[in-house]
Image 1 (cartoon, helix red, strand yellow):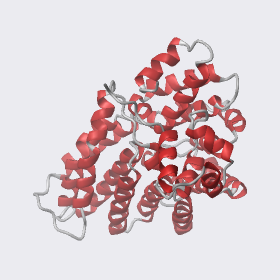
Image 2 (cartoon, rainbow, N blue to C red):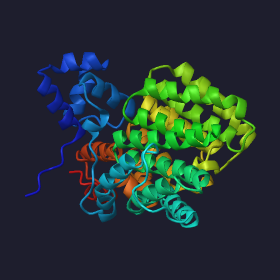
Image 3 (cartoon, rainbow, N blue to C red):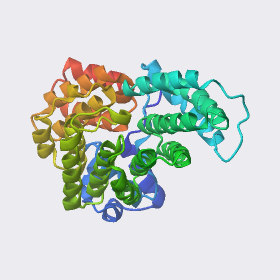
Length: 398
């Protein structure tokens, strides 16, 4: 018989018991009410708020991913394949130290460029299994080519490939590996001397730090990178990179409970978006629509679901032709809806759209699993709809 997958609440309770702490003591360390902590442990409140989860993890002296885990539904073979390939990506990232010589022959740069473009296409579609399968060989090939006559284009491609690797493993629930990928991205960017690429690497590092629950580090890295980019805003991608970094700053500041600072950073990004319009530069899709998507996520995690919904109503996510941005909009809006009484049906519909757009992302998201679990628990007092039951089965939530 297959044992049920531990919930986030189960892991929180186990960690607290390991310390021998009462609910009141643990909750006081996290700065949340003991009633909320108790409800989360008992599965009566979803632990699908990144900021609160980071506070709880810090109180329990562990990482957020120790509590969230990395859910992989047995029915989703692609998601299972993606998780199984994280080890190979990690090993490749360990091996591609630019201070060390390559141990393989350098492939032609043209073929590597084609592979990198395909991997980026897969990442944008949230096909993590496809991207993860190709990344290790691509990373090693670029490392080898960076030691030869095609060093400059190979380094630029290596910066992109390590950024993608960091993004893929972070979205699969492995923030420490994401940090390693971001560090390799920094090494490649600094070797090019391109200030925009150095900002790109700072974006990867800031994202990984935030995923680890280190919002202070995330804010420091991103804010410093914004300052360093100011003299280079006229370079191709400079405005878009600076704006994207300001969105990271806004998110991290909200995680640090500095809402005024967060709004200031949003304002700076909005000013830049007024100059750039909608863009696809460097696969970041900076522009007014993406700012709106970030704002929904910030409010969903910042504890203001009504404001998140107000922002979401003005957004057309299809403006961005990339599933990996659209899925965040639908999943984060669903989290906000799930916290508003009487909006459960809408929350389920948004989750289903997210699942249709990016099934691997949804099926490997601990936050989506928690939202689904909370909706199912609430619906048990009535007859759960067929759509919610189907989603719960696919997410292995019971």
